[in-house]
Length: 385
Image (cartoon, rainbow, N blue to C red; front, top):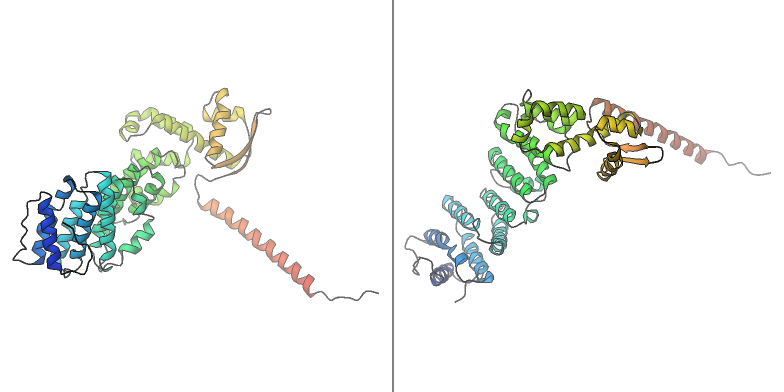
């Protein structure tokens, strides 16, 4: 028996085919159509469609079945009952029992998402389920590319998703990206999430702010964190240990962290941070701060400031250069490091002023070059004798 998908057949015939197929694979459903109409038919079909997951159906047969349900769903007149049916269908697909069937369900969800009119708010729930399924099968990048693209896609709905819905979606995305080891994208999503809160409701984001700070501190690829201090939910945490710890990683040196750790060892463990990893990160951040003030540093100074043994200095410098946060040349004979460039740990008023002065200097120099070239072009040509 075949399951018709997007063929030009009568919808009622398609419903009968779906009922018959599900009955064949063991679902508790009648082959007779409902006397209450198409919506009740769909309600019953969707209620048992996951029976095919446990049956001996092939991947192609399961996909054909689910696609056929989509083809019927999209011809049902839009209304509250339709949205309930779509939500129920998404719930079934979100529970695909294997990666193989998860890939099938993700393709079907993608088909449904793009088949629905762009102004329907229920597309949000389809997208949410796509994130859930894609995260479990390691395909989240096929669904999510950036917060900007996601917003532009979902905001076509009338009305667009509420702030609470977007917060829920961003929270799921953060968890999914972390689980898929996409820490950089996860950090951006968490910052996007915290940016949705205002001064009035910043206190509601307390848990999210804690997660954001802890995740940033724990991420071995995240070093620059001064932008977190400007987020309203993070500002709301001022005076708490988590905010004090973030401030240390933003602007203080290694001794500041060691002092904090000695006084709050249990707190460091309670938020899931590893002390040795923190020390490694703080050593690099301290080295960057040292490089802001001096382009030439001796090994002895580095040993003292970073609390390193003589045999550890060269290895540390090599690891620091790998991060590309600092560019430098190491002279092993002279036991010195010559810094050529580095990032700023913080970018505040003084850094903006320095950048302004550099750009102003460039502008002045370019104006002088332009004037000189103009003078050459307009200079009168004198005939040779």
